[in-house]
Amino acid sequence: MEPCCGYSQISLRLQNMGHEVKVISGHAVKNWIATHKSNQKTDLNDATALAKLALYDHDLQPIRVKNVEECRIASVQAIRIQLRTQATKSLVCFKSLCQCWGIVIRRGSLNTKKMAEAVAAVEKLLGAEVASSLMILRDAYKFTMKQINALDKLLDALVEANEQARTMKTVLGIGTQTAARLAVTTGDIKRFPMPRSYVAYFGLAPRNIITGHSGTPSPSKRGALKPVSSRGQGKVSRRGDRVARSFIIQGAATIYMLYCKDMLPECQLRRWLHEQIKRGKPYGKIIVSLAAKLLRIVWALLTYGEKFDSHKAGVPRSVLAAMEKPLKHDAAAESAA
Image (cartoon, rainbow, N blue to C red; front, side, top):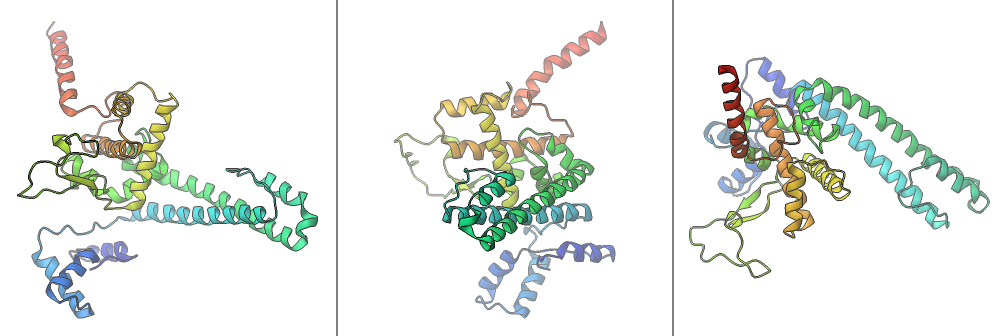
C-alpha cells in the first residue's frame, strides 16, 4: 500500500490479523509508472506498480509503520505545530494593524498586557469597533499560547515515558520537541548499521557525485584543490523528515550560540567548534556539520546503550578505544595486586 494519513493504524490492524504489510513510497510508484507505463497514472497501474515493487524489488526500503506510542507523540506534536502557526499569524496580524494606526510595539515584544495598554492609549483614534477587534485578536493569541503551554506538558510526559526519546533528550542541544520528533521517525535503531546511514536518513549527509571518467579534481572558489575527503561530494541531500531536520539544525545553532557567548563548557564539541571557526568555515556549513555530529552522537547512545557524556561526545571511536586500553590495563594490574 501507499502511505496516507492513517496508514500506520491500518497497517497495525492488518499485522494483527497475520498479514505482512509493506508501505511503499509514492515517489517509487510514480517512477515505476513513468518507466514501465509511459507515465499513464491510473488506479490499475498504481496497483500493478505496488505489486511489482513489493514482490520483486528487494532493494527498495519500505516505509516504517509507527506503533501506537509513536502515533500519540506525533499527533500531540502536530497539534502543537498547528497552534504555534496560528499564534504567530495572530501576533503578526495584530502588530501590522497597530503599525497602520501608528501604534509602536517593540520588535520581539510578546507582552500581551503592554499590547492592551498600547491599544487603550489611542482608543479615541481607533474607535470602539477597531479597538474591540484588536483586543479580540490579542485575546486569541493569548489563549492559543496557553493551549501551547498545556500541550508542552503533555508532550513532556510522553517523552519521559518513551525510553528512546528520554535518552535523546539528554544530548546537548536536543530538547523535548527534537527528541519527540527523532523518536517518532527513528524507530528501531538497528535499522541503521552505521552512523552515516542515520545521518543520511535525515538528509544531512552529502550526496555522492562520482563518475568513472572524472579527471583532475576541480579547484575550489579560492583556487585551492578541495580536500580528498570532499572530492566527488555535493550538497546535503535534504531527504527525509523536514521537521526533524529543522529541529536538529536549531539545536546545533543553539550550541553555536552558547559557544559564541562563552557559555559552552569545555568539551570535545567546544574544541571542534573552535577549530572550524579558526579554519574560516562558513556559519551554515558549521551548523549543518554540527547537526550531523549530534545525530551521530544519538546513534551511538541508542546503539551502545550508554549515557550522554559531554567529554566523550564527538570523540572518534578509535581515540576512545585508545583511551580505554590504559584504563583496562590499570584495572587488571590493581586486581592482580
